[in-house]
Image (tube, rainbow, N blue to C red):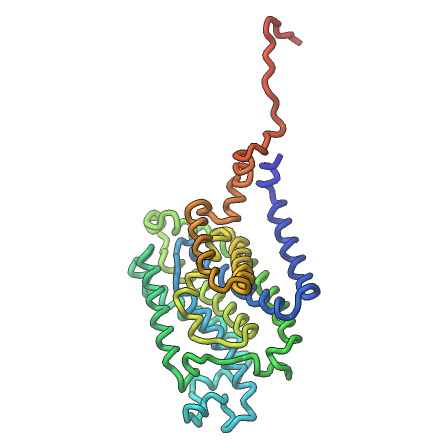
Length: 375
């Protein structure tokens, strides 16, 4: 009975009901600070969905998603900075005056437009991911070498952005909490509640989009790339094209998540491009369950919420807990929590504890000395 329930659609449906109920109830029961944190974690869940798409379904472990996450954040921050700079000298953001810059750099100009910004938030990361991915995939680089190259690209972008003081305020980053949007301060409680609701809707939309991608023939090709790329190539498909497209999609999702995270955290900086942050993104998906989609969402939210709570109580202990959690997943739960559930993990655990019983089966009765009665 338990196994039939586990393999049915009811667990997933029940899980989604609980997730939606929690999101709806959050603004009523959580203070603004906690609600803001939950909004940030939901934005990180969008990034995790992209990682699950390229890693869980395509077998591409990227350690450089922080590049695309930060680019989306910078695009949003640049628009907000320009939208709130009319009162500053020369009508440009205040930090330019600290470095003697009196004219707005040319690449800032398009970000006066809200429409351009909305497109740039996902398109710039997606195009960059497509370019970088195509350069790597057409040379048939995969596996650990692909992971190393993405991490190397991450370091290059981090050092570049970190040194651009006169263009994007370098290591200090761009603040958004004191900027204005729709006539209100971005950091105000009212705006943050609005961002929370919008982020929640974007998580659902991103999940639906990625699910649509992996459920069709395109998704079958991605799984074939993950399982046996040479055979797929022999069958006449071009894996380079499919991997480039899916890497671009993941880059676009990371950009959207970065923009939503930036407006809720109040700042974007090169710290989003650090190696530890990009590795954390992979841990979220690994713990939740790669190749499950919903596991990526739960992993991102649960781990970051645990990080927040533990860091408040024991600031120095979270790194040890996170490391131990990752070791546990790699050794005992390689498919993640959701994968463990779907692979009969709970039933096996109950059996080991001596709790589970096979319902619906009966012991065979032996009738010694009695002949079988014929109907």
